[in-house]
Amino acid sequence: MTAGHFRSTLQRSQLEFALDYLVMKLEIVQTGDPVLRKQGRWLTRADITSPRIQELIELMREAMREAPGVGLAAPQIGESIQLAVIEDRADYLADLSAEQLAKTQRSPVPFHVIVNPKLTVVGSSSVEFYEGCLSVEGFMAAVDRALDVRVECLNEKGEEVTINAHGWYARILQHEIDHLNGTLYIDRMKTRTFTTAENMFRFLSERK
Ligand code: ZN
Image 1 (cartoon, rainbow, N blue to C red):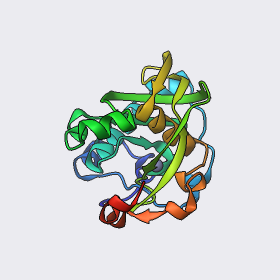
Image 2 (image 1 turned 135 degrees about the vertical axis):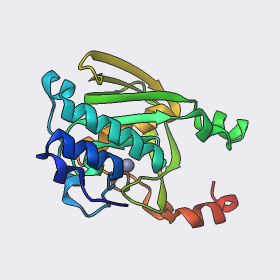
Image 3 (image 1 turned 30 degrees about the horizontal axis):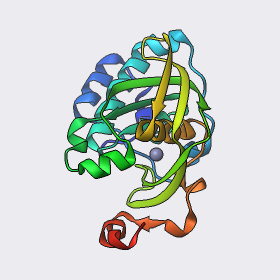
Image 4 (image 1 turned 45 degrees about the vertical axis):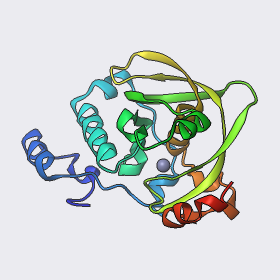
């Protein structure tokens, strides 16, 4: 990617920031960077509504779309805070068959922000699917995740919200909230399923 870390711009003036915005793309850090292993700092309502965090949210939205990804957690761009952005766009689902959509229980999720999330598993059903991570670029593995979760958090305005999620959306939430607590999917994966993304699709027919 280009132009370095977001954290390098934090002390700069608004003008410099605006100039940076034109040329800067957030660097998504890769596994091995210690920031991915820290517990993110909780944010206050004043933090959330500050220009700095509002700008960070915008940059994260762009970085997520550009990747493209369905979720991006602040530690992945070098910010150790309890904030993630999520969006599963209809056009990402366009290439999937009706059967795949039904199997993965995936449907579009509008863009939204979660801050200081508390995740509760609902029920005892779980399901195993392959997933990948923008910070473990080029790889995938099967991960068992709860099918239903409830998340209590703050939104981008600092308002309390409760999210009840099912299927793929529940998986995204579990993956992103893990990031905020220093956990990666490779900690939870079935290690013998670990594969390059290329081989994932190459040997798809042998993978059940
Ligand atoms: Zn990830």
